[in-house]
Image (cartoon, rainbow, N blue to C red; front, top):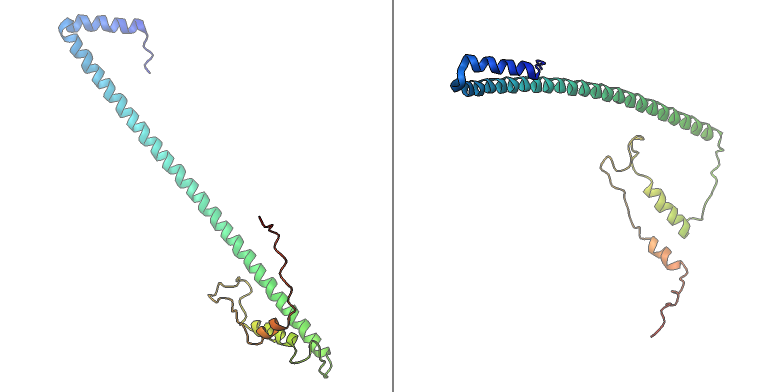
Amino acid sequence: MFDIGFSELLVIAVVALVVLGPERLPKAARFAGLWVRRARNQWDSVKQELERELHAEEIKRQFDDVKSSVRDTESQLRASGEAVRREAEQMRQDVARQGDDVAAGADDEPVMTGPAPGSPASVAQHVVATDEAEPPRDAMSPPGIDGSAPRVEQPAALPALADTAPRTPAPPSEETPR
């Protein structure tokens, strides 16, 4: 720190011995050591405080950088969500236009398609059709977000269908008797 060599320390010790004498020299050396130690401790505490302040500034700067990147990401997500909504709306309009075109081109005569009324297949279609008659959900939200649970109903006509299905016997057990 002060670039004092051994020869300079020896000269200082001889001068201190001559000036103070042998009785007061140990006490003066302890006193000088105490002040040097206090000065070093004070310097170290100032240095540590300065490092803490610099570290706090670094953390604040990093926090601000992260905050700005989160804002940028949020704006990008909002923009892409808006683009998806516009595309979905465009698709809905296209489907509605195509549906109007199909309805305008259809004949006035009703055409019977599918199974005969009253048959087990028509009952099953009726069950499927009533299950699909739920209120429309928002196109952007997954099922169940609005708090509604999927509806599962067992109509009275289904057990009759189960009775008409052919039954297969259970396969024999492969265990060997001991």
